[in-house]
Image (cartoon, rainbow, N blue to C red; front, side, top):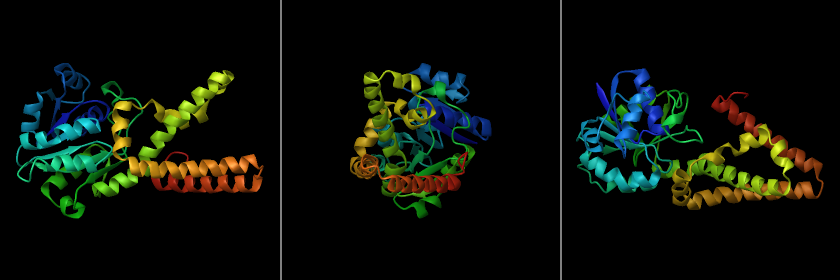
Length: 292
């Protein structure tokens, strides 16, 4: 039976543990900064047993670092050195290049490292928001310097099995390819939601009726503004060049929309709406989103 150690059973780690317990076939250990946090994962049905970090890392076949980016970078090399020689260490951070650089500092004799990033989550963090179906139908990116080679190794096959047991679909990429794509698909949307909510809050101070009128459109476009800064600051700063490039594209599109509205250009505004709607429908159909 495969032993999986989840280091940091919060939203992602807790959801992974719940999914693995539901799937069966593996033993799940939870380790955290405090014993109470690890024990809470057991009570929540996210682990079979709580264990100190050293024991969890040393007994596991798969060690999953479910921590914010900065914490993963700090501990990944040491965890690789503490893990069993045949084990594989992975993580769930939203940026991969700095994690790989830190992991490689452990040296080639350490346990294998393959990066990971499940493209699923919620705007509210913590074990209390974990759920067993969080990863159902989601893409789970696995990253390596040579993805094709890594996918064929025992470590790669073990991680693919874990990802599928959680309900997700594995997708291999290099760290650099992941970070470039994630900037567009994940990091920029987070920045936009944050900016939109700040703009609304400022406008609503001048026009309090706006708070009463706020409804589904504002709810949906600002949902990510509740995401924890502790996760996102490191990711955005760590991927600054590509995030800024993506934001410049959005700023250009916003400026174009503003100019069309200002000059009363109904035809150009209609064309923009139709192009955006077509692109959204195509993406929704590809992803199988509800309402596609």
